[in-house]
Image (cartoon, rainbow, N blue to C red; front, top):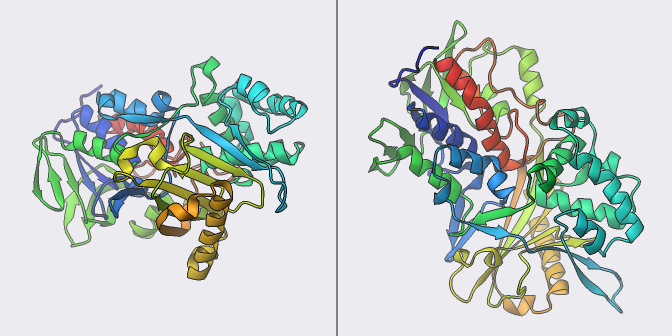
Amino acid sequence: MDKVHKNQCVVIIGTGIGGLSVAALLVKSGISVTMFEKASKVGGRTSSMMFRNHILDNGFHIMPFYKKSAIYTVLKKVGIENKLKLSKVKNIEFYSNDNNSNSSISNNFYRYPKGISDIIFGLSMIPFRSRIKLLKILLPLAFTSIKKTERWDTISLTQAIKCLNDNTKSFFDAICMLAFADTPERISLGEFARTIIRANPFRGGTSEFGYPQDGGYDTIAKILAQYIKQTGENNNNNTITTNTGNKILLNCPVTKVTVKDGNVKGVTTFDGRFIETNCVIISYPAYFAINELFEKGVFSEEFKSKVNRLNRTTSVVEVHFALSQRIEKQRQVVFPIGDHFTAKGIFFISNITESVSPRDEYLVLVGTPVSHEDPAKSENIARISELMKKDLQQIYPHFRQSLIWERPMAWQLVESVVKEPGLVWKQKMPHEVSYVKGLFFVGDSTVSYGVGTDSAAHSALLCYPKIMSYLR
């Protein structure tokens, strides 16, 4: 096979985890890349920000499967895994309010099970007989093959658990919030099974989770970007260029990808510049790209219709709270169980790493899925935020007196972390289109499994050999 020309330059649109992962793999192989990013920093949906000296993430992100994750695999393949210092997220518990009346309230925390023995002996919130029923569902999933799980990609998780009682179903609610940031009815049984397989220690898996020690989930993106730019220098505020010819152009959206006679010819930027290239990788949702960047006729209407089906969104309200005291001493994540709780996930970020907050202040993030209408109305966001504050006050009586400030955030159209049944794994956007040579797609909207950023990295691992084959 012919060698790749070292002066071959690949254009990558988007600097989220998918784009950065495939760029790092290409750079490792000696391929020059030019990356275009419409935002002022790398990271995409994982970007973080400073607010009142706290590091706030754009939602709660977590690295699943730790050293078995796709993200870690990318870092290891390019030899920079030691640059990512992670804090383990291991103190995860359920909170169940056994009596929902105002009197005689019994408050209980229950350990999040990390294995079969934990489910049998440690999951005391569920009666023993229910635990046995639970194992009858989980064990076959944990020991099946990835190939077999594809048969279940059209089945909703709720179909598999409809025979369980409400308490046991609450267990799945919490797992889905942690693993998918969504609810069971939106999760396919196949995607759930793949997660269980990857967490099975008897098959080399792990249920460990990680978060950057220095705070800010976009640390991962920054490490990948640093590797890509290597020994380069900052020429100006918007361009990072390297001695090897690699570039990351910030505040520089691409407005058009030119295709002629079925071959990629180049891209046009927002300021009218045309950059010639025969290889373009798009690393933001494909259903946006095919409608925004290409002239009519490049893709068939049938293909566009199929890809547009993937445009499924969820809506979320999340609130960051800064506290003057540590109301939770040891737990890092708490999942309130029951419909009477608005808050579905409470993340004590300062208990994961103190780097996110200034001294003697503590950061908590609380979130819940909401209807599509809620984020569009400020009064609804305020109402949901107040309900979550009541949840915190009920669980932690010192919450209100500890509160320094709060910062609500709401997203009406957040791309689903895991697509709905029938739109997952190999049913997502393919990495390449047979009749357009030199065009590739990566990111969590493309063929891959996993959750969010890990899915994006997995797509890069799957797409990279296809790109290299084309370049040869």
